[in-house]
Amino acid sequence: MKNKKLLLAIGMGISAFVIFFIYFKVKEDTLLSKAAVNRVIVSAKYIAPGAFITADMLKEVEFPEMYVQPGAVRKKENAAGYLAAAPISENEQIMANKLTKVADKLSEIVPIGLRAVSIAVDDAAGIDGMLKPGDYVDVVGAFEDAGSRGIFSATVIQYCQLIAFNGDFSGNRKKESGLPFGPLGCSNATLLVEPSDAEVLAFAENKGKLRLSLRNPGDAKYSQLKTTNFSNLLKNTVKENPKTQEGPSLEIIRGIDGERVRLK
Image (cartoon, rainbow, N blue to C red):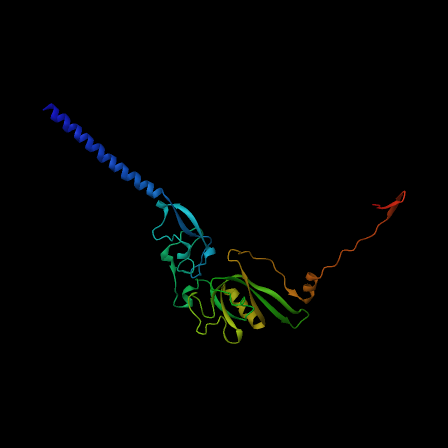
């Protein structure tokens, strides 16, 4: 009888040990799986709502699985080429529910507080047809002043985003003509600007000819720029040769060799 009780107690102890071992093993595996490092795509900079997302706006980082948000994008190609349906902060994990491929109306991708303004550009001003929605540009104008300044150029606006080109604001539409430019080589570039800049663009387009200067999207630096006219253009391009000034000197003759030494 005692042997039976002893065997029963041993059996129950072994069963309890096995149960606890399995329980803690499952817990350990769960914690290890959550601590496993996985690659996630985050934003390299702030992405405004409606912005066309390009690969340079994204970066790949490693996160413990337990901190990866549900629906987080794991590959750049699953985010690049999409539109931001909501604002995305710098270093924020890119969520699939914040991305969209198509906007039905241009107004849907214009962030609150900003304005979409279209200007006419020619072939050269369109960077030879290579401008795409999502690019960042400066607007440079050439103007003619009836006063003493004559013809001059100036940078009108710096670091504004191109959100549409020839009516293409999704990055997916195909032109009916199949050509990058409209009639007579002219195109319409739609820029995202502040309300005050919208007034500047309207005035500048009425008074002169505008060009777009393409810049790296990560270069948000605003530079102090000066206007350029024919006079200061020549000053910047023509450089005078420095003149050497002859000072007093002393000629020293050693045998048949001579040497001239300049005196200070």
